[in-house]
Every structure is written in structure tokens, then in C-alpha cells.
Length: 177
Image (tube, rainbow, N blue to C red):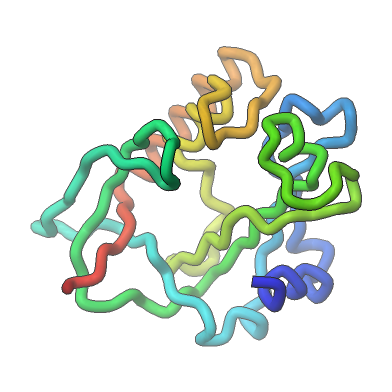
């Protein structure tokens, strides 16, 4: 994991953008997205997310990501393999953003960054995908496992509309057993 996090220092500045604003934004809490270059991505990453093909069975339900967490919605298609990723976004929160909910591992300081997610996609030349509806809801409502935001209800509804449009045609890949 540290090897992947170290890729951040090699990402061109034009490939780094600010993510959503956590509730701790005024105190220095930040979220950034770093798009890896094709050279960094190579064939090292596989996409766990795909566009659902016509006729594929979609499996949906609720489950906890970690023990003790409130179950969240999931959506999956069964495939024999995962495709090589064409785009990879690394999502980093600084420890100040994570500390607002007690989810930080490192000392709560704005210069301590923690890798939260690796979003790999088989889509190429796409913009950074929006946050998933379940993560957006957990963050906005301050549910367990979420990082509280300071967005207004109107901002939340608008982001949710975009999120559902994007993620509504996609699903995680569950490998055949």
C-alpha cells in the first residue's frame, strides 16, 4: 500500500484536484484526487468496477464493509476476470479530515496524508468519477464509516443526482468462484 501511496509524489500537478470539502475544511481538513499517468498505471491495476452489460445478472443487497459498521448497499455483476484498468485515481484524505470522525491513523496534521481509496476503471479518458451514492450519504449524514461534510442540502441533492446517474449503470465485479 505504501508503494502505491508513494506514487503521489510522481503525479503531475495538473493531475491533482481537490475532492469534496469535509466538515473540517476551515481547520485544514482536505481531500485530494490524484490521477495516475498511463506510465504509472501500466498493467499494474485492475478495475473492480464495470459498466453493466445488457443481459448480465446484477446482484444487489446490503452488507457491512467492516465488522460493526451499519450495512450499506452493494451492487455486483459476476465475471470471470477483472479488466486491466485504463485510469486510476488515488483518493487521499489528510489526517485532519479523518480526525473529525476519529478515523485517522497518523497524527492529525494537515501534512499527514492517508490513502483512502484506489479507484481503477476500464473507462479511458474519463473525468474522475463522482463519489458513490452510499459514500456520499454516509458522509453527508455523518453515518458510521463516513467523513462528515459541511455541504448544504441543495449541494447534497445535486451531487446525489450526478452520483446516481454515473453509478446507476455500473457495478462492482464479483469474480466467479
